[in-house]
Amino acid sequence: MTKQPRFNKILLKLGRDASNNAMMKPEKKKPLGILFWVCVGWIILNVLLAVFASFLPLIDPLYQNYDAVNSGPGLHHLLGTDDLGRDILSRIIFGSRVSIFVSFGAMSIAFLVGVPTSMLASLRRGRFDKILTTVMYSFLAFPAIIATISVLSFWVPRNLAKVIIVVGIFSIPLVYRVIRTASLAVAGREYVTAAKVQGATDRRILIREILPNITPILVSFLLIGIAQVVALEGALAFLGLSINPPTPSWGNMINEARTVLDVNPWLVIFPSIALVLFILSLNFIGDRLRNHFDVAEVKI
Amino acid sequence: MGRYLLQRLVTLIAILFVVSIGSFYLIHLLPGDPAFLILGFNYNPVTKAVLDAQLGLNQPIYLQYFTWIGHVFHGNLGTSFISHQPVLKTILRAIPIDLEMIVISQIIAFGAAIPLAMRSARRPDSTLDRLLSAGSFILLSVPGFIVIVLLVLIVSVKLGVPNTGPSTYVPFMENPFQNLSSLLLPSITLAVGSFVLYFRVLRSDLTGVLQEEFITMARSKGISQRRIMWRHAFRPASVSLLGSAGVNIGGLLASGFIVQFLLAIPGIGFILVGAINTSDYLLVQGVVLFVSGSVVLVNFLFDFIIFFVDPRISRD
Image 1 (cartoon, helix red, strand yellow):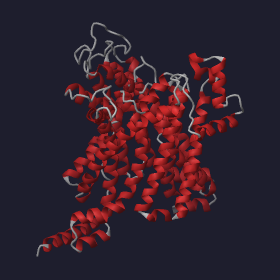
Image 2 (cartoon, each protein chain N blue to C red):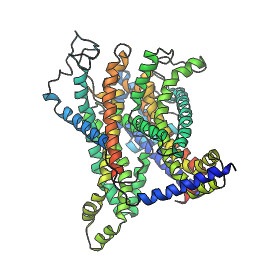
Image 3 (tube, chains in turn blue, orange):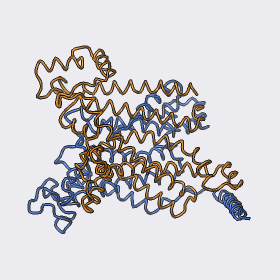
Image 4 (tube, each protein chain N blue to C red):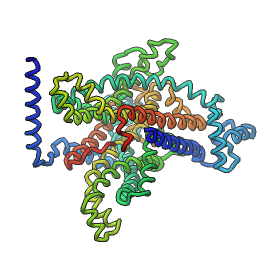
């Protein structure tokens, strides 16, 4: 007797699943939603602020106002000042330049190398693919942060270009894996075979057939990759391996703030919020785009 | 089966070889004469001769590698010219702290992720599931160094919980209670990142497995939900969980750098950052080799575990 209701429930659930499946048939694209556009707006705002920071009526991020040291948020300094009397708002805006510059630069390197090689590997297959994939997967076996920290600690004197190159190169295997998986699925389709039969060159197939079909995943992974590099650069700056102070960056602002936590908590809270919102927006946009184009989740 | 493990072993050795070449070559990234930079203030003809012998710096570069790797196999990673201590000894003294942090953090992460993922997967799109998914998505975007700074700010500065702030670390043997409380915040930080990863991976796999026919079959036999979850669904769903745990635990050695640096916990990360700042290149090289080697070994270990959980893997 006791098992009766449960069994009914299962039957009900089975029925519901079946009807759900039937209803799902003419699948519609999920709408992007308002939050998506808020995030897009936030990223655009951040980029614009970073680009035009010098033209904005901001206090010089390096100017030390000793009359207002460690002041909390107020009218004169909207987000307050740090332990040297520098304006936090202006340092956050100028600091975003480093994060944006490094992440866009590193991802450009990673994509310029990773995308063509992975697409070619997925099209040609054979030994070329096998060797390249083994090498890339071996590099993936250990965390990018160890590799970047070790190279950056030896490659002195450090500057931003070196950070970009090192982070970019160590991101190549990640890009390679994601894009190869995506374009492998496309390379097996009939239209690619048709193009091959017609005698199209590899270059033509890659650009005209495969590239358009992997663009959604390319874009969404680009955004997620940028978010990851922003976090990585933050961690490097936190350890003092990225740009040298006094030039502000989100990571080194948080690093400087940790010594005056008890006096001025705002100093760590504002850059953290800026960093997290930036990463969160990028992740969200990437995730939504992937859902929207109904791309199966590729493990990152 | 043997074939699969052998194949993995060959890959492991190949990767370790590449890692060792990489760590060795780091020295040559230094501009100019490496001996001059490595020795720093200790530079004189005598120390230079010692260093040259240690690293084989006066030989052609491929011979230098063999000299160096020969020493490494004998457990000799060189002697630091800054602290005059053997590099391996310094590393071995620090590593138990990292292990302790990793073990505590993994207990927290698995302890939270497995039950929560099961609850979420049982009723996809329920309020709890949506909340957890959104929460884990947000946490995914918070880097570890922000988590630790905020935790220190809230717990040890604002709430004033004793022995949780920077420089409160004492060895376990000296004062077990203070030791645990000083490692609590760093362990939670490492646990947050792991939890998010494990929860998301396990939830999505469990949801998939629960749709399978053998689960419906088990349900129709009247087996309890709990038993279905643990005995029937968990094992097939745990393969990617173990895979990501393997990669993640290796990565924790590296994320540990940041929390240790902030709280002055003398683990391997704190040593590394200190060595970078004092230009103690031999120590940096030793740490890099040690950590990368451990990461590769941990990955291999987890491949091994996965193989026993799901022997079908070897057929791919």
